[in-house]
Amino acid sequence: MYLISPFKKQYKANLHSHSVLSDGKKTPAELKAMYKERGYSILSITDHETPKNHSYLNDAEFLTITGYEAYIRKDADCKYDVYAKEIHINLFARDPENESIVCFNPAYCKYMPEEEKEKYVKVGSQKTREYSVDYINAFIKTAKENGYIAAYNHPWWSMEDEADILAYDGFFSMEMCNYSSYQIGGLEYNGALYDKMLKSGKRIFCHSADDNHNALPPDSPKSDSFGGFAMLMPESFTYDAVIEAMEKGEIYSSMGPVFKEISVEGNRVHVECSEVKRIMVFTGSKAPKSAIAPEGKTISAAEFEIDERAGYIRISVMDALGRRADTRGYFRDELGL
Image 1 (cartoon, rainbow, N blue to C red):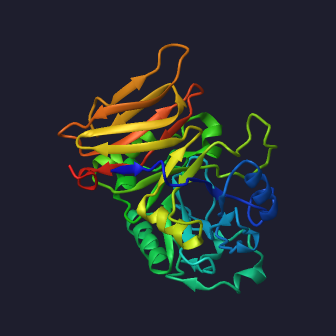
Image 2: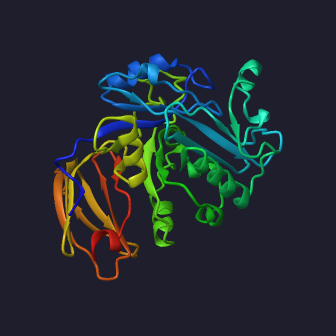
């Protein structure tokens, strides 16, 4: 059984970016140019509370995913507080022409010109947003009912309580690494949180993304571009197939390394990847299994036995620069165990 097939093409994607339509410094066309030049095939320009169809940028080798970043704060007027909890949610449209705004609130649309606000289709309750688990779950449900899939953004930066995070329902994926936030202090790698979600029984996937605003040039050591991405494995390079791959978990997270093959036969899992220092299998126990390269060497393959008590498996690798790549969690029933 292939979890990542060597016969299936992988497409590099940044599923979180900002343009001049909100607080980014690059135009959508400039974003396409810089990402395509770096080998990316898929980009979602997720401006704050600004859903836009950017399919005019598409070509045979490059695809944009319609989406936007919604957010909910404790302050009723959406005031930013560096010490306050908040949640950011990326919404990706199943239909590229869907530009509806979920639970529209003008206080959150601060980057949108007044005349633009009237043009948007508005779905769901338009009352003041409420920072609570119940409201957030209702928001996600409304988004899904209106043609979106929802991803959980930068949990470390958002400062949310773990109990609340585990109570959220309806996310298809979470950001393992949000590179913009990771650049702040190196803490926005969320492997431990992801394992807790899997151990609680949540069947949620994981991906990484830049969340780039491009205030600094790409060659700056503080640049927020090209540090976190998703690898997608759709059946074909079409909009519908890419969305389907996201929903089905044909996706993994990376900050650099790539997986070439992951297969399961019986109770053994075989991993092949780019050159790394460590290959690890997490199973929900205190003792993940690992293969570690000798000092000054690298490895690119390993094989492990899956414990009888393993509730799930997920593979994580780390290269010589400390960059990680992570699969989603695969539960026992998915593995035929």
